[in-house]
Image (cartoon, rainbow, N blue to C red):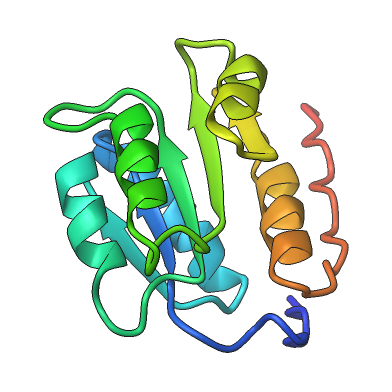
Length: 145
C-alpha cells in the first residue's frame, strides 16, 4: 500500500487518540500508524490533558466525548483555558450524542459519529494536517462458489 507523502503540516508531535474503549482507541491508533503518523493514546480526559502538556504537544487530538474521570467536554474546557494547549486542533466523536451540535457548542469544526468509517477519518485527519490522501483500493467482494 502506498502511503501519503508528508505535507506542510506533517512535522511536530503525535496524534493523540483519546477513548476509554480499548478496542476503539487501538483501532484508531493502528489505522493512523499505518497511514504513517506517530500516535499517542490516552484512556480518559485526565490522561489526555497530561499528554497534551508533554513536549512536543500533539499536533491533533481525536477526542471521544464520553469517558470516565474527565469527559471530552471537560478536556475542551480545560484546553481553552491554557494558552499553550488552546491552539491544538481537536476532532470530537461519540456514539451517544449529537456530535455536530456538540462541535458547534465547543468551537470545533472536526467531528464524526460512531460507528465510523476509517477512510473518512483518515481523510479528515490528512486534510487537517495538510497531507494528501492516497485513495485506497476497495476490497473485492468474496464469492460463494
